[in-house]
Length: 134
Image (cartoon, rainbow, N blue to C red; front, side, top):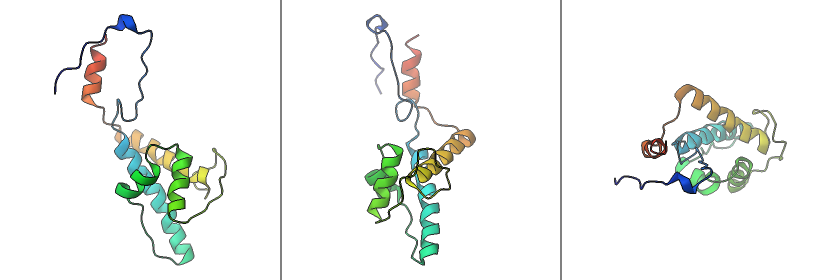
């Protein structure tokens, strides 16, 4: 890997960075938390409706319906792919409420727990580049 080109800070007043996927490797954590949140919901639904449980697939479902979308849009998109409708609810719905907002908040709760318990991997190259800005 070749070294990053030098940056002349005289040409910038500010530099903003997105943590997700730029400074930190959080995509795997997001995907795992989406899987847990959706699988919990899908298992309850399958048991209640006496249907076969079909788990959330990180490779296909995450990439096709969730990744890169705002939280509620990802929930809605995935559920539509399974022919499931839930009420919109509110952005502050509790994580156990079966609404778009509630299911999104359950994923966010799981993500925060994962960050707290496991931490997050940083991209070494990004950190090295930032350090050279001092």
